[in-house]
Length: 284
View 1: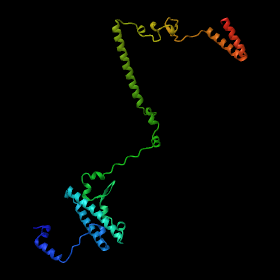
View 2 (view 1 turned 180 degrees about the vertical axis):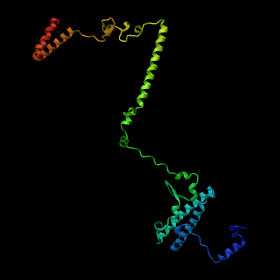
View 3 (view 1 turned 180 degrees about the horizontal axis):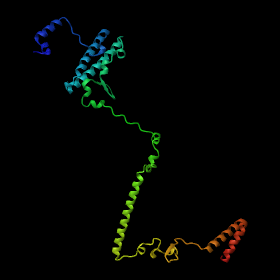
View 4 (view 1 turned 45 degrees about the vertical axis):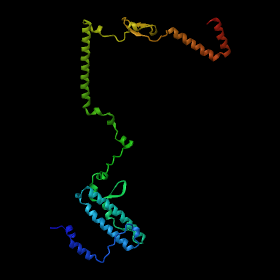
């Protein structure tokens, strides 16, 4: 059975169409809207463009047309939309209504514009084409950053660890771990001590083995470090690293200081100068 498109192409169908159109002149739409100077014709061409857009929008809803066909249809729809806008401007110039303001926007609302690319719209299955779908995906809105005041509101004693021991769990664990560490350190010290004694070739008394930490070795002492002071038991207990004055030297220094204060208070400058010259002559 022949399809409708094939029936329309038969010789009889073409002859019948020619009879119907006999005597009629099929008027073509002007390429430029500015070429039309009659308001009724301008509205007629606008309605014709809207009809073509509606047909193509219905066709582009079919995702099985293929990527290239869908892209071509989408381009044709955008081209017709621009042409419709030109005719609406021409209609307004000829004294007709302003369709951009009062006209229906249903065809325009079916299309979707890419953010940042104003004017070109995607209709129907064109919105799901590869490379187009990603353009419409919105990036997740980043979480607003908290201010310093908001962050400080959440800080309390727990933040600084002041109440970590109040739960009664941490302290026993720390005590157990402390005992374990001390035991390991003692074992290591005993092992090192036995190794040193084995290398030394004999067992010595514990008191003799332990080093006296306050003792000073002979090779480290010198004149600048001062004299060593021995305790009652004969052990070297203290060493003076700076010269320490005796009680007599301290008393003499205080007397000299007191004399200088009295001279500065009661003696004149000329008398002090004479006193200094006399001391210099006497070699004092």
